[in-house]
Length: 116
Image (tube, rainbow, N blue to C red; front, side, top):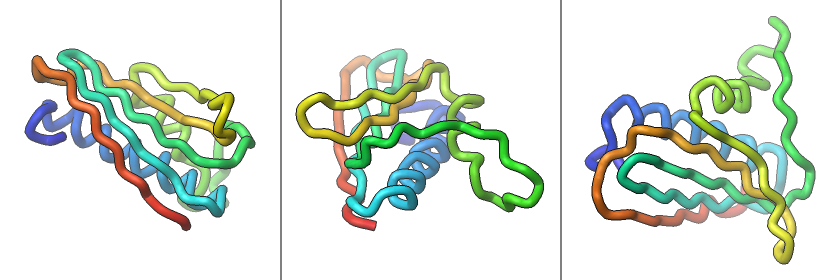
């Protein structure tokens, strides 16, 4: 991704991907699947898990340490984000989009994070 996106876009994408994958692995026991689509002006990343429970952002307290900031980071840094519930397969897809991706050809890739 770094060779197709500006470095600041790639860095934000890497941070948000790790936050969403961590959430999926910590809050489910069935792993996660990550897919990314890179178009000329937009990067879309989807993280799918198999738990139907929808994530809820919350404001952590000082006592939470580093817990509870993942979705707040997604809200703050992504140009768009949301949660979709796949009809047939169950679970959910948490996704985000970043504007400003470069490249004239669309790229689609997938990665399976495996079980937690």
